[in-house]
Image: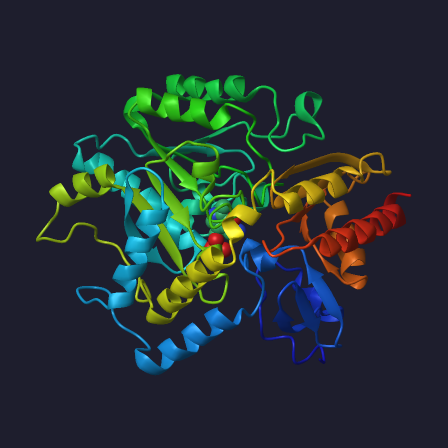
Length: 440
Ligand code: PMP
């Protein structure tokens, strides 16, 4: 494609100028592989952007979308309904833990996050605690790109050009390499101590001002940081003690990535509100869903104005094509037993873990971390150029037929749950060559 033809599309999170000099174009996808415009097959170890958990272009999902487009292409969801959206909500509620029985549809992870934050504010407002307007999140957290999500996110580049909106403070969440480097699965040390830092923040700001804590069970875009043992449970206890809601951002971790439908089930900690998106439709249609506890819904409903509980929603909430994609996706996850396949002690997860950790000792590798089907390899930063190494390794891997995610000085992997041993072997072999090429 000529650079001229590439000029109009202002690409998100992309170095537009260098992309246009050397475009990386995808023209098709099937199962574990992309096809590029020059007909190369590239192994997708990212499930797109952490979303195509059942692999690409699944026929059952494709057919469900096509059929729905011919039957009911669109239906407004403000004051009207269509059956599939209710069926899907029931199904999601039945898959979710605890009392997360109320499903609010959005179109993306960012919208799910902003919806969840607004629910937390509306909950406290309904209870008469109108001072509770502040959020606690984590350094390195990523919660999408809308105003609320960026306010609470902890990635510097996503903040600095845009100012500050929601009152917030953050827990320290950098990986403690002195304590937990090269952990296989969950890091063993320091979980409770780290969680106790929440007590300090509460002391500093006062519980009467704090609405909710929002965290990813496993931080994804901030570098793949699995929670140290005991961390999430302790955060839950502290929130309960201070009447602070707990929001889990499960946009990445939902739908099988940790061996259950949701990471909250894997880690046995139930939040008050949970955000989802991505794997909900296997990436085949834009959709998110916020799952709220009955207590959240009931409090907000009791405070309704003219019968409307929540003055919030999107033109495309509960979009019929997205609902059809989600129903078909949930069928596939169940029929192909993909939730179990993602379990940390499953055969493929273990094989992946062993392969990854065999890279320890290669030049430049300062940490390897993984939980189940989510992993990262971190590199020594280049002198005077922090954050550059991930993209170097990503680029040379791409040239050798492997798609990885670059995250600063790390590369991340979140393969589709259909991954087999041969895909692990290809990944580890390519990674080894790429690492040696840059650091060897
Ligand atoms: N939350 C988390 C944890 C995410 O990883 C992401 C996207 N990577 C989002 C929210 C935002 O999702 P979206 O890009 O669909 O808006």
